[in-house]
Image (cartoon, rainbow, N blue to C red):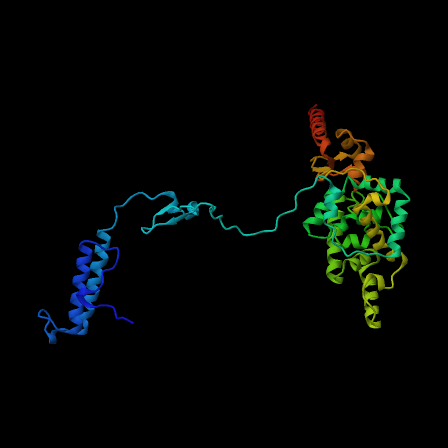
Length: 397
């Protein structure tokens, strides 16, 4: 390997011209002589390490100053030089300035780096299609499922009426299910529990579309008194049901077992699971010893799921259902009779109670909210203003 030249004849650093070159060569010579400790200017005895260090620091300071003096004149910076995000398609030249990059023929400009994220599925106009897209529970294919499919197929009018009732609530329920990232089959549980009838009441005292018994309702903070039964309230009961189902799924780690526990009870299903484990049997819904109603519960939900997935295969005509909210929540701010509120919204009492089934004594408390179809909100607000005006006028007399 060739050793680089030293002393006054050393190679000049590229990019330096004029006085800067001369000064750097001169200082290099001084340092070279000092290293050999031979010079007419520095006698041998006078040169020592401290003098050497002083000369080195002095030389570096002068060089830094020379390079600053002979740099390019100052100028205003362009936006692309201040913020490099404005010039992702540029490259800096030797002076550090950003200049347009010449793109060779046939080559496209590089795209900015973007973190890849999964694309959200496109929105759909049909709510049933949205429902199908979120099916995620394990499939169940048993004789009981086929029996229930045939049972619903032989009663197309009954099945259609239940789906028509569901059109008032299904959008809201599906929204809440998706927010929690739960399988969308859960939105069909009220079909099995109550036929989507908020006034349904069982022999065991379960009420509402989710059929809460009093004990479970109290556990999940659903109030039940003379003024209001929140087991029938669509919003409150849906929140409580989803909380309960999430808790059951965490307990059993299996959606079919969670559904069985929703029907039969968490403790009862837990005992059945432990019994199978003690006997060395499989711990699945199909292999547990369950009461007849519970053995039929998951197959019913699977049958409804299969019908929603392909209604034509069962000769059932599903009513159209748009993928948009059906109702909005409104706060009247005054105490109202249910019949009066229905009149303000230009609705029949039955239509009003289908969305507001929890007001047991037919009175709406001052701080309560009511559900109204989107196309009835404006009429109700106009009627409410008129009602308040008349009541104010009556009081001022």
